[in-house]
Length: 163
Image (cartoon, rainbow, N blue to C red; front, top):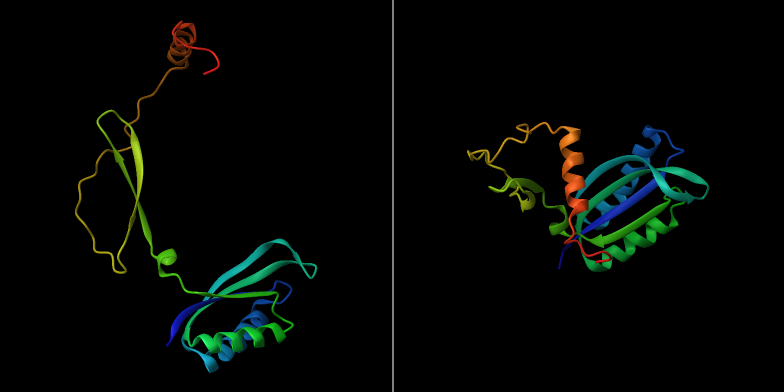
């Protein structure tokens, strides 16, 4: 039974972009020989959290593919034999982690703004929804007013220290 997998791949940053592209194309061909529907995503050149083989930068790629569970072991073994790969990791593809999410802000009548994450469908349709409140409608506050309110709060005898 075919399962969907994701291969995270880190190539040395000492390569130029053409060499890295050539190496990742060879790896894509290797994955295509054992898997199906291979999709390559270039995540760019990023500074590594810690040096690997005294290399501080790496090219990150992800390959999403369908394969039999036995074929994943073969792909992993072939990747370990390649000296040009700094790190590689194959995981079962998690569709929940990759669904796009939209952040929606709503303001209630008291003026408290809350943030809500909503999942979007793959094809987002334009919605005609009214704007809850423009954030640009802010009041300017004078520092003297802030000082007076702060002093009133600090002078309040109802405050219990240490709580």
